[in-house]
Image: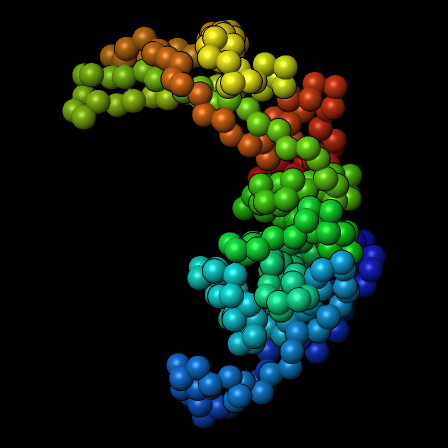
Length: 286
């Protein structure tokens, strides 16, 4: 148990451990799987642990065919959930399922690291490519599960990217999405073949009062681009990037690319009066 998990969904690990099967059973199931025969699966349905407006939070048995099918149903062909045998006492697989269709919307792998025997975290979340929940309902799901995201592989950013949901000060919260403009600078070495290119990217927060498209006005759009390019220039030169021997002077900036912010430190620059919390800063550590 952890100091999270206040709603008690991480328990009874033995009930969700992989089913032990003989070699003959494994071969029989493999043949049935290739034929598409689901009748021989002989596996329990995932357990509903909480219900919401249009979805259910369910828990799967580890290494089960129903678990693998759920990932496939979402269009996730990269996750192979059949390697949990070594984690049965510190691992759980949850799904968020659309109640009307029975189709999974998201899959959440909850794991406690051997190096950290205190906290469970959500690792490698997977999201459906064809369906999604309303942000508020998905927030309710995460609050109910009450487990923080791992940050080792950027899982905290995954929830921001998909649902604009952040984990700060021990709680899941929703925020307004923020974007920045990324300008690329380049220094080229023509003394090698092929030429070597050093690049530096500078980001500039978007000001709602100065839309990049000028609100549909061509002259305003030109002025807005010039405004943001000037801000990027100021930021770039203030950083005093050196020019390496044999390289050209820094060229740029390029035309900007608008990108979504998923890092709390960059978010704080977009909203200057909102500083990142200590917990948010901690999630950025390797």
